[in-house]
Amino acid sequence: MRNMWAIAKRELGAYFVSPIAYVTIAAFLVVMGIIFSIIMTNPGGAEASLRLTFGNVFTAFILMIITPLITMRLLAEEQRLGTLELLLTSPVRDWEVVLGKFLASLIFYVVMLAFTGYYVVILKLYGNPDWGPIVSTYLGLILLGSALLSLGLLTSAMTQNQIIAAVTGFGLILALLMAQFLGDMAKPPLSTFLAQLALFEHYFDFLKGVVDTKDVVYYLSVTAAGLFLTTQVLQTRRWR
Image 1 (cartoon, rainbow, N blue to C red):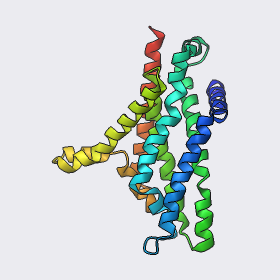
Image 2 (image 1 turned 90 degrees about the vertical axis):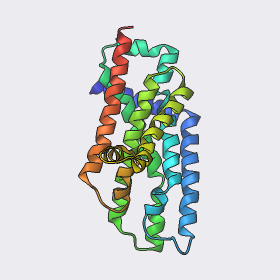
Image 3 (image 1 turned 45 degrees about the vertical axis):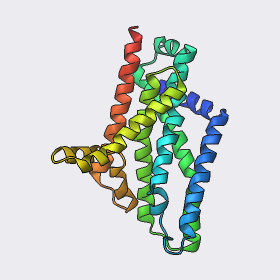
Image 4 (image 1 turned 180 degrees about the horizontal axis):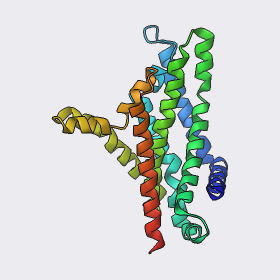
């Protein structure tokens, strides 16, 4: 566990000394701020919640782009520089490497979300927000982000090129998103399976203030699967 935290600390330091991290956060906040402003200034759409702000197609698309950008360098850069082999031959387990890097990306992601906290302050000042849906929305964002980051980390382990890692991560996330649309065209039981596999389908209940166990288990399962497969990819490199 000590090795895992040491790796996470190192990666967090690398995030916040890089201008890319600040550009990513700034871009996210600008776009989300515009969406929030448009919704709040719309007389027919304003409501004292974050359901419309975080529950639209633009937000989903932003997260699909942002999360692979956060993870693209974590393992791809190590491979390009040749430091991954040194890391893997040191007295540290593969799962500690994976969890350490994942934890760093998740903390960075949560920090980025934390900057949107002023939305809640504005809602409190000008309305009477329902705190249940607000809390569940952020919980859903964290669980969704956790799943997306684990998939991005997996694609980062597969290549030495950061751009390829980001594009592949986006493609993998898009494939899970498309499962919902394919499910609408298919017949049972395939349609039911695809609907349950759809990445963003499990997110909508959180926006309504509903924390369903099956949705939590789904995102935790996707996260665990992504991290497990990443660990397997690293283990194969030990034998090359």
